[in-house]
Image 1 (tube, rainbow, N blue to C red):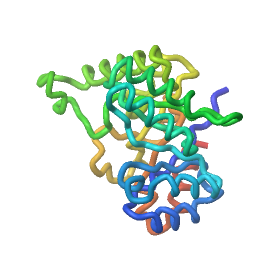
Image 2 (tube, helix red, strand yellow):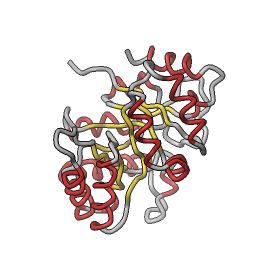
Image 3 (cartoon, rainbow, N blue to C red):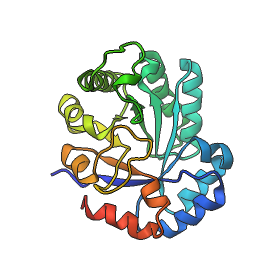
Image 4 (cartoon, rainbow, N blue to C red):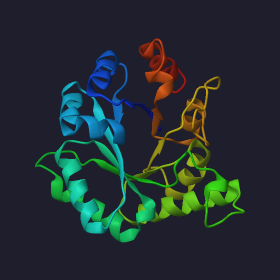
Length: 237
């Protein structure tokens, strides 16, 4: 029987103090936190160590996309610093994705659990009109491209993909039960979608087969972040 998806709270803050303040409140409430570009560039790898010491699993969401050698080296470094999950872009292609998997192996310490490497298919801020190479693209075209990238990522030795809630069901059907699906753009039914184009409720994403649900501003900007996190958890457990 499939377990409930894990809630990942995005620590989308510009400074370490803000991130750690919220993280301290969420200890024992949520298992995962996400560190993205802005916070990582401000706080660096020391923040990863502090979050790990607090008991969190850390999703390092830096979305690597470069030549294979560079991505291999970057993935090795992310593994050494203790990231539990990290992202690269599927559009980087086979050689880059396979280099990322090799970098993970290179960076592993004895006894260390390997981090999951997830490929970003298409950003959830993108809609059909944003596909510059296909001006007449439809929602179906967007879905088909996402599924193609997911299947390719699976063939390229990656553990899963980042995909919007709209594509979870078809990717689960295409890639099977053990391919990890992480879904950003998660909102409760009455929440503002912000700058996300392809949003989904936590209950629907869980029903369709997502393994990880990423929530940022609806929790981090709430007057009561702990209660907001619990409200999300109630819908998926």
